Amino acid sequence: MLVISVKEGESIDRALKRYKRKYDRTGVSRELRGRQQFIKPSVLRRKEVLKAAYIQNKRQAEE
Image (tube, rainbow, N blue to C red; front, side):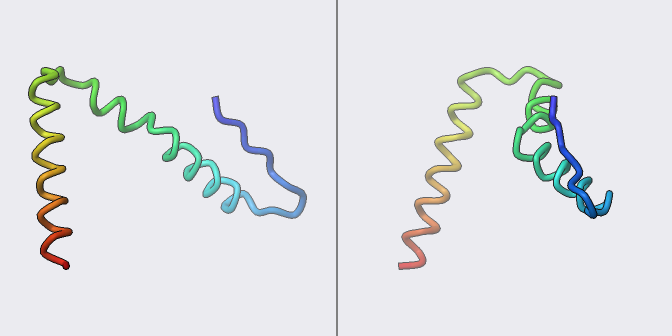
């Protein structure tokens, strides 16, 4: 559970913005999205390998 203490003189909007930032950093929404359907481990690995190859090719192209 996230706890955000509102400082004296701080607006609610600013506190809400801090809460949203903290919530995004925990990765709860990403995990929930990932659990909506099962993806086989082999498919996940394949996807990671393809992503790594893409990033590597992109970095080589920059040089």
